[in-house]
Length: 206
Image (cartoon, rainbow, N blue to C red):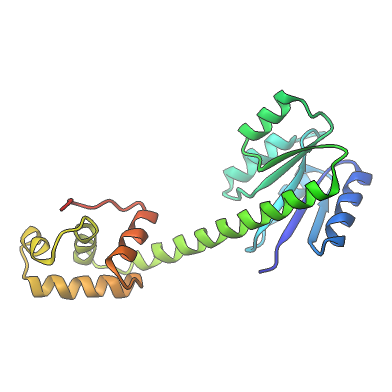
């Protein structure tokens, strides 16, 4: 899958150097001179990360992080700063930075950090897509199928589920098969994992 590295730095020379370095490593990169300019950009549905200058006129790096999180666009962020103090590093990590680098940045270290960030972004995107798909499948369940799901993931046997719901064991088997089909799971273990990702708790434990 194609990926994008966003570079936000008000220093034109630094920004250009970073863009050239990323391009030389075969990475697609886009540069922005300010946080405001970058925040007007709609992020694509592909893995991406952000190289972000910590101190800039207007919105600083921490404000960018807050605004991205607020609109649901949390992506791996690599802070770059000319002030590599311990407090600054701690502050960046508390803000959720993937990495904190000090100017002038060592090229190989920066490229390594970017590759790690894009790998993380790819993994996060996969999980978001999977979660959305599972949530959509869950919506197709009938109220009764949802009840069977919540009991089945607790480890209850068909006979126990039948007793709990006041229906026949055969009917439970039919509902459970429909649940498995709709949720696109092949085994009970798969169904349990899907339910955990959706934060669905069992109605009763075996």
